[in-house]
Length: 304
Image (cartoon, rainbow, N blue to C red; front, top):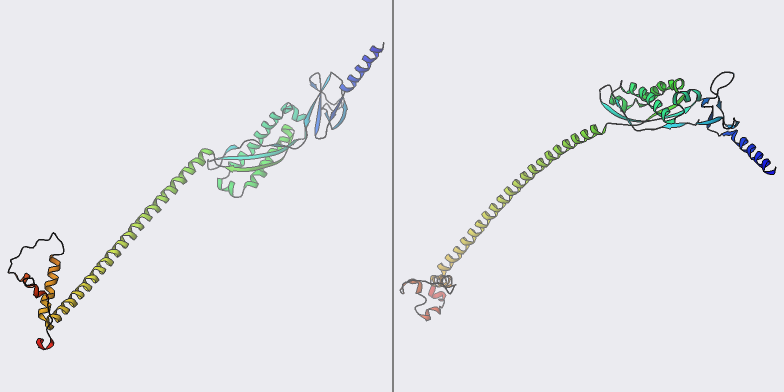
């Protein structure tokens, strides 16, 4: 008997727990009865349970909970065509929430993936319409806010179609497709390479001009230096000749003796030098007699 009472109490507890469900804040509940949506007996509309504690028939009713908070749709960038028939990659996001749970469930079967796909298609249609009537310059320079506002207006119909309220549509980035960006980059790179080659060739040309100018200046300077050296050498030779002439005028014999010594020095500067002359040549005038090498300068009276 005691065991039977315990079983009855346990069954009652199970039935009580199974008949109660809680919908938390930020959610809404839909009850199914034998796989059919439970509807309001008076209006016939789908019955949506607000946050709170609710009751259902255990093992007969099943509860499906839907998110009623603001959600974000942020997928990959999509390709759009401008009025110039040029492609753009537009990255956007959408803020949305469920406002008509009955319509939402009937259109999407309660699947968040289906809701995202349908909502993205509707928003992209609005963006495609607006972008298709503008040029790239208009889109990038200052009409982005107008595009977002028009896209938001276009997505307002999703309230009746999907039971979804679109709160905001924002464009995060507008870029050229990867293949177009690469093509532009390669063209810019080729242009910069051509400019660099032109500057390099101009630099080489200027370097050659500077080098030629410097070489010409060096040649002129060397020629000038050589000319001045020749002039100085000529002046020195002239001065030496004058000194020799003055010496010859004062003492001819000493001059001849000095010139002979210079000739001897130049002729016998190297041991391997060989000189072939006649014994009676004037070259040996001061070598014929060793006493001749003891030259005595004449007195002034003798010079007179």
